[in-house]
Length: 395
Image (cartoon, rainbow, N blue to C red; front, side, top):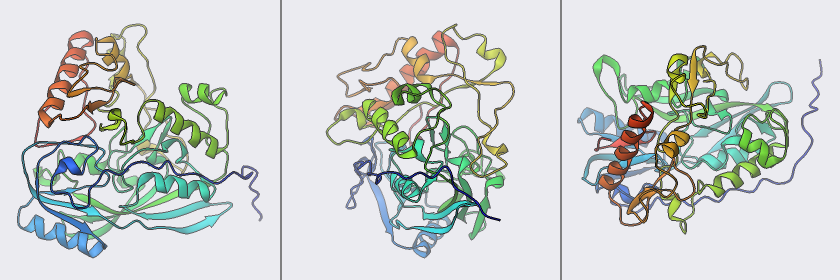
């Protein structure tokens, strides 16, 4: 039985986003390892060149009761100005390999956790696979992507993940976690949950119980992107919602939108000295959503755990409504540029990024986050939840 590929129609070479990498390999503080540019000195930094080195470093630290922080691009961390008395581990491996490329079954690739995320997106598009194109330009590493189930412009990474190869700190063994194990949800996963409520009451933070070593992705063979699901993206492309365009064109549109919001790293732009979207979009019950003002956005909530086919769209949770954190922040009296000139202020491009305007410390950012959170509670009765890993401080 043959299998045709009518969705594969050719494309131009895929240019990289060329994001900055501010991680200083000679760093002695978390301020030099994070895109927010704040954080105290570290006791030990390990630039691990092999899986064995990662596992042995973490095992020794756990046996000694020493905190472990796995770090990729440092784009999702707000760290205290106090010293981090633990070991920081960065996976220096950056390997991607194709393990299957079939016109009927799609493509399969395995990437080590240290691969820069956007490098993986480029690789997938050059291979004529779709499913990651709307996640273009997101900073960070492949290993961090499944922890919070990164998503943007209508796509989530959960829809493409087949399995994870992980080091289980509880059993001190390497194992495989499959899609069905991972409990993916909106900015949620089994891994992220283990940092809050771990096994036998143990909290594994600031890194999960399961340390990602490799990620296996399964993607559809096509050069036309999945149907456009995001209104702003459709408008930018000049198409209707649900239309399909070349995946490479969709990538370019996503990068243009992200750059317009200072969401692609640029050392010359202080708006990019941030952790991206600082608060997640609130998920409410239908009853809670009726208390929102008439103009507040309302969206369905994807049930990533119910994906029954690689590359398929996730069904929606019944009775759940997602609204826009940015809309709530704006309408609670905190517009883009709030608290300028700083040292900590909202991005001048949009209200969802807290930025270091130069010279900010962790407490400056904490104070700004508290002000915004409390203002939204007072105005709308909705509590915003921070998206970054919060290390050594409390919002």
